[in-house]
Length: 215
Image (cartoon, rainbow, N blue to C red; front, side, top):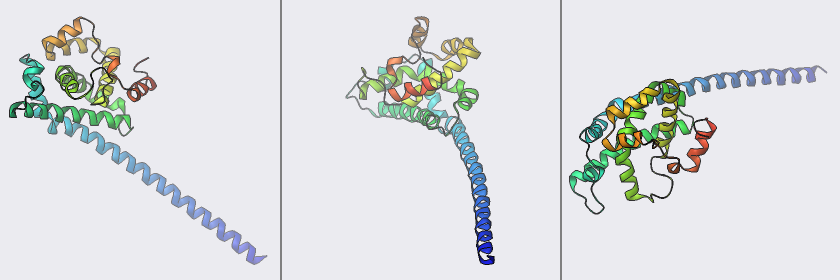
């Protein structure tokens, strides 16, 4: 009987130790996840304020001078050094925002954080970049199909637009007036949506519906 009592106590103690280790592991994992999220949020700021600021300013200058996409990005088959450099600038900036969108899509970063902290940057950037990105996208993808290129960028644009529509509708109108090209201002006045629904792929539409950004 004593032997069985010792064995029973041993397994009880072992179970207690295992539970304590699991609790510590879960707590450490929680801290690690918070650290990763914090690092991810810092990376968002670095992307906008350091990595792409110069190139984003260049794209803003294109819109301010009302330069047509064809002038900036050239026609198919024309691969001058200037045009290739412009395409690289557009690619680098749009990829940076797309990575942010992908991080949101995968739940690495909260969409609330994006809306509240950099929602204005997301919205203004797309108002400026849309004509050039659309032109470049149609050069390499079927324009009659949903976007594959930069689809996560489109996702956070819609989420941020929704945020300002609910909290400060005039912000959107002022952003078009201040940062939009002639074409973008015409689209706004005509009621053309910033991101047409036909541009959205199924996975993006599903995410937007899940989060109540589209019906």
